[in-house]
Length: 453
Ligand SMILES: *[C@@H]1O[C@H](CO)[C@@H](O)[C@H](O)[C@H]1NC(C)=O
Ligand SMILES: [Zn+2]
Image (cartoon, rainbow, N blue to C red; front, side, top):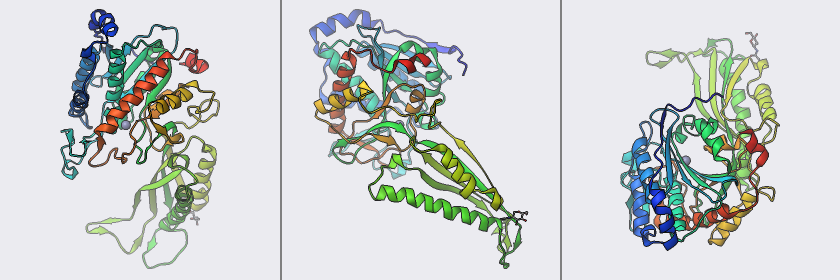
């Protein structure tokens, strides 16, 4: 796709770096090290900025992030691919710019909240007696964005110097599909020029002690099926009415749904490995002033489904199933669907990030987490969509990881919270990962794919 040079580009390269970088790093000055209270308070400040859809306060978030960047002498750039939707790009230059860089990615927007269902205002960032920090975005995913920054703050304070350059991208609009954020970013010259070798993005909380990591995601398919049939009196029993024909499809879809769900229930498959199907609307009937005409069988009936297709699934066989079993023309049915993201790349391979020895970034991540005292579950397919898909589609390795162990999964839910100690632990984990990634010396990082960018 074409790319227009962004019209609303503002570039404020922090002058601070010139003055600050050498002296502060050399002395390991205490101005860069913080108490836990200060760290948590910065997280609260970010959470208190209302970036909920439908009218996220993106500029306030961007200003906050740029000021954070300045306080730790990172270069900063604010890019508006679409007016009103800034993407904040920060850089910690490495001493070996010839090596592929690291991209620490997060989104700044959050989903709306039903405020009356919350114990504490979702933008108060209230901390209760258990240390739970309540806020929209505390899990999804302002935590991660701030943890990256805090980890870098600590690394700088310790005098660490990265070999590889480290970029942080804070992107808008993930919660509404990411087209004006990640979508535009991956098409841009900006990304191409960064020479990224690996990107980290969001994952999910884990109710037990093991962190979860994600190496791919399911593709949403939005399917509508429609049956037509002769209308008739409500009292008449006859074959091939529209609702009868649709019901046959619903039965078949339900049994497929059960077969998939059963594999999860039996512990044979994880949520991201099965093909989920859920009915999201059902449309039929002849309206009357009081509701529906009750003695008339309608001539049309329609249903809509949200399907999530794992990258390992065979998209052709699902399409066949839809055409032959769920909406067969022989039953006077039609269907249409949108595949929101491809599950295969151009050569027909599943779009996933390798989690074996062929991907050095994977091993480095595993080791770094372990070294920092974290435990990992087997890598999973993310059950829903994230911005990672835009990067994986380019052939870039992308790993979804939000370090939240012993935490209920509350993204998009009422009373989203993250415990303070879990948050602080996550900073240590990122410190370990960034250190490992930034000092990794092999060429590494998927060269062929990068050339395609
Ligand atoms: C399909 O529609 C045709 C034309 O209305 C009708 O004759 C036929 O019985 C229908 N078949 C089914 C299976 O509904
Ligand atoms: Zn998210």
